[in-house]
Length: 90
Picture 1 (cartoon, rainbow, N blue to C red):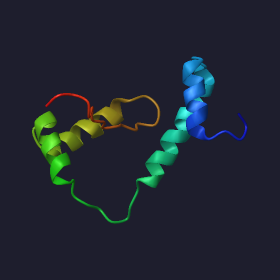
Picture 2 (cartoon, rainbow, N blue to C red):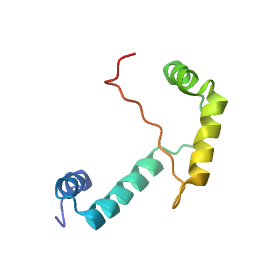
Picture 3 (cartoon, rainbow, N blue to C red):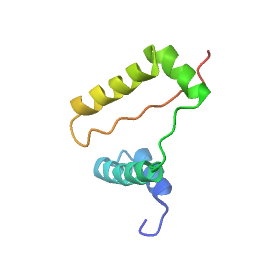
């Protein structure tokens, strides 16, 4: 797997329940994903995201506060993901 794409390593490691390989490949993927998302131009959430944050948290500030709290309370890096289930019914 030395030259395999990271996504292929993750799929293979997950299918084999390879703990250390999955954990390390996952960390590498998370870091790359995180750093590709950084910008020096702050922006407000899109209307669709803002509406979802209001539905889920009450308002955008409450969502930000919940993510900060989760990161502070999380062992390790303190990274927190916000994900949406696009298959869920509204």
